Image (cartoon, rainbow, N blue to C red; front, side, top):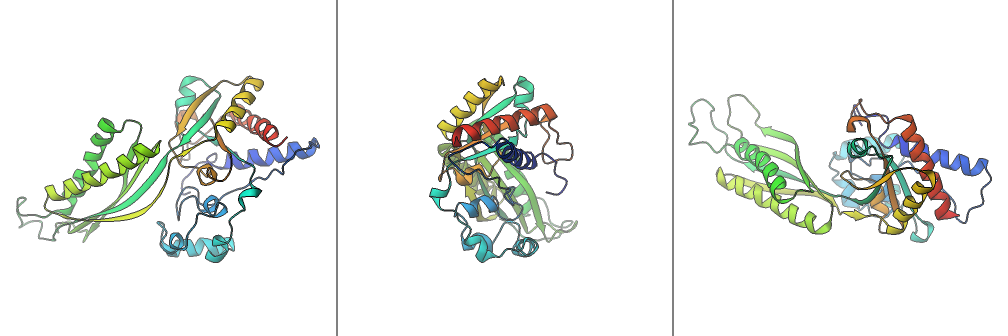
Length: 324
């Protein structure tokens, strides 16, 4: 990720490798094989959860034909990695080959740090949905067209962006919504915007709220477009449903935390993770370790060494218990 941090994703991969080394060096006899996997494009720069969704058999041809990061960027990435669309579509693992999946990650927030707690045991991973919403008005001379006579696409898009903040705060307290990008056409100082495309993403912790939030956001877009006399095009880009973590794996983490003397608390993950791709195939669990100042997706991202060690030790003990 451009200007990303050194711990998001990387900590989990390195800790998994260290788990394998410890098991091998100590000649531990387990009933299952342990694997460390470094999945690609979890962040959604191209497709979203690409590697883990491929392993889970959830990638469809249309996902690769129209990726949200653009087909050209995906083709370049596949060429660099030595894979093809065909090989990605054939990457699914048989369900019976997966005994479970454990993931260690930095929290990407400040809840653990503020509470002074060592470990966050993830109960649920939020669902994430995205749309491109295009507000359609009319291009006119920006100097000679009165404010009352304009069909200004920028006004509708901007009003929508402001309205969703109040909507989520008032009606969906555990959810979030974000407009992270706007594109203006024709995009000139002296022309009233004829089209503004807004990139919308929204997240909710459970299926019921996820469905209600999606409907409310789209209704809000319709309302604001009509308010300014605009047309509206809605392009659905995809969604990942909310994913509850395995109760059995959560209990394994609880027991291992207690055995290691680590404090713990339950947390919902507000970010998507590869664990959600595999949640329907095998027992899945996630743990968080504290992030300093909650910084993530930033060069400021940092997790203290002691917290990294705690997470790796917990991952090791849980892996041994589940496969011993």
